[in-house]
Each structure stands twice: as structure tokens, then as C-alpha cells.
Image (cartoon, rainbow, N blue to C red; front, side, top):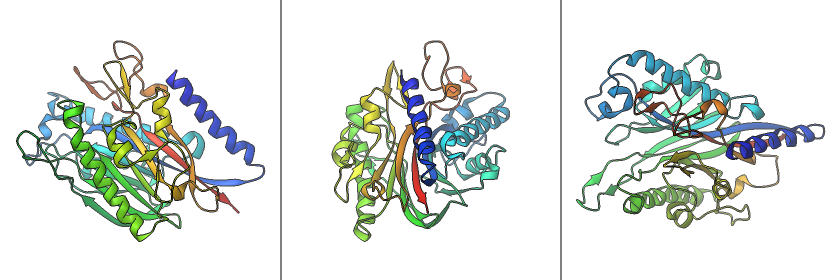
Length: 348
């Protein structure tokens, strides 16, 4: 059911654009987010706990496995949005990467190298060294400013600092228009959803602070908040702190979350114990929802779940075909499906 719904949505994109092509022409860009599921190299970094990554836990053949993991990630990225834009994403946020070196290997894979992706990356204080980053096609997007923002949270039992992923803020020009992107990987649900909830609420407050800072300078700022939030669209972090809405009828500084309706329809990006979650989301601000397509505006949102990245059989049939499992490398992709949105602009 989920796959059929999303396939239909993808078909609708094509019909809409084609039927309007006789009257109007549009430029189109895909903006995406993808959890790359432990994209770690094979080198033990003694400054962090990377030895607990699935890649480092493999006893043999790390080199070939790493190369295959890179190729699999490149294949998915090359395909996201291609059905409509005839291009890979102009901008894609990623998480669960170990360092800049793995990203350089990724963008230099033969499936992506001709896209000439640039990289924005900062090393995080996360205990395992898991980072977020932004990849962008240099011909489409030019960063103007970048910054990394610490999330300071503490263990409720010990009051000790919990070192987790920073939030990445990138401002730049999509062609000639200024946009801002906040890339997230919020704290996990380890220890239980309720017990870990305050950590994600704190993460949402940090994202909201970054958004408020941007909107204080420019109330009409075009802002994207994206990431693996480890919360669904109806959880307090998204619903009460960010106040993200399913309707495009917003105040000037409001946030639109197209993934609320996906979630209501039972569609998710990751599965656990026969239940789907929609942790991966892209939210946008009101100025991206105008009907004047003389500038880039939101068109549609989607979840990329093509058949080849879905588990075909067994206990996890229908789940994302992940890279790593209980028996080592699965020759899969990720335990999350990517999410994406299309931006369109009328060509005079």
C-alpha cells in the first residue's frame, strides 16, 4: 500500500509538469535528506568510539565492504528526484557519516563525480563521531556562510553531559536566491521514547532558536529544517516546539511540514517491530509556499522508496534494505528511506 501511494504521487508530479509544459516552463531542483546508516571508513580513530560501528566490527573484508557501501549510497543519491528533475538532488543533507573523508569518497564515486558535489562538514562532539553534513551541486548552490551549533544536553540520572550531534546551518544562493538549511540528527530513543524525549525537545528548541535568528534578520527567509529527528511529526518536539503544521495556511513565520500527512496515511521512512516511523522530515517556512513562481517555491514532497532499496522477503519484508544486520554486511543501503522535496520556478 505504501509503495503504491508513493508511486502514484510520483506519477502525479510528471503529469502536472507535462500538462503545463505547453503553457509554462519550470526550472526544478530537488532538495533531499538521507540517513546513510553508519557510513564509516575502515580506519580505527582512537579519539572516538568508531570501533563500535558495524564497519569496524567486521572481522574480514572491510575494504571491499566499504567500497560497496559507498557505491550503494551513491546509487541512491544519484536516483533521488531523477524521475522528475532528470538530475540528482541539487542539495542533500546527510547524517550518520564518520568524517569528511567518507563524504569525499562518496561524491567521487563514478555515479556522482560528474555532478561536482561540494561538501559542508564539521566534526561533531558525538561520542562515536557520527556527523551531519550537506552536499550540494556547485553549479546550482553556492554557500555563503556555514556554522555548527552544539546541542548541550545532560543525562537525567547522572547530570553528565551527553555528547551528541551538532546542528549544521548553511546559508547560500540557490542559483540567485538566498536560502537557509538546518541539518539535524536528533538524539535517539535509546532508553525508551518517554525517557529520552527531553533530549529531542532540547534539539527542537535549538533548531527553533536558529530559525528565530534567521527570521529576526529577515522575516521572509526561505528556511529548510531537515533531518533524522528520531521523532514523528506528531511528537512534542515537532508539533509543540517547532509548531510545524500540515496546512499551507500559515502566518509569515510559520513552518509547514508536508510529512504530517504522509504519517497520517501510515507511510514511514524506517520500521521497527512491525511499526513504521517517519523520523526523516523536511520542513519549510511560509515564503516557500507562495503562488508566485517567479522565485523558487515548494512543489511537492516525497519519500524515496524504490523497489531496489526494500527488503524482499523474510521477517523484515517491506522494510528498508539496510546495509548492516545481525550477520554483518547485507549488501544493502540504509535502514531509512530518503526524503525529498521539489522546488520549481517559472522560466520567463
